[in-house]
Length: 112
Image (cartoon, rainbow, N blue to C red; front, side):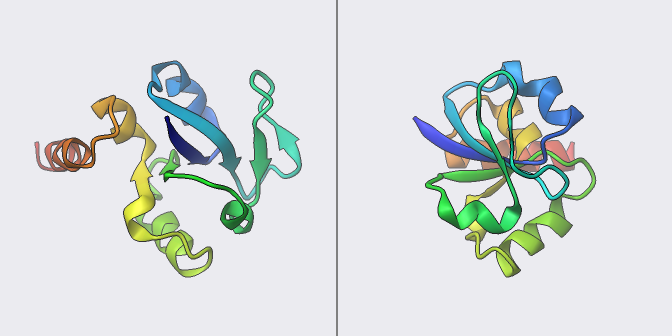
């Protein structure tokens, strides 16, 4: 099973969480919520600088309109490899973790 850290524990994640298949959410990274847990699943909510302490396949950004800014912060400040950063919305839309399918979905989304 694919392990995912969701960046942004807000309304957007809560809106699509039922549509997440084929993955295990190991943590939420959020600058505004510290030392708490997801009420439903007891998943830790961590600061972005704690991402390196977890084992994950992807960091899925759920913050609308901030993807590039957060991506650059994750790469520069938190040392997350670029190929492990994805958009949560496109991840949900593709409904699978196949990288080639994800990239095609991303191109279709931005160039429709």
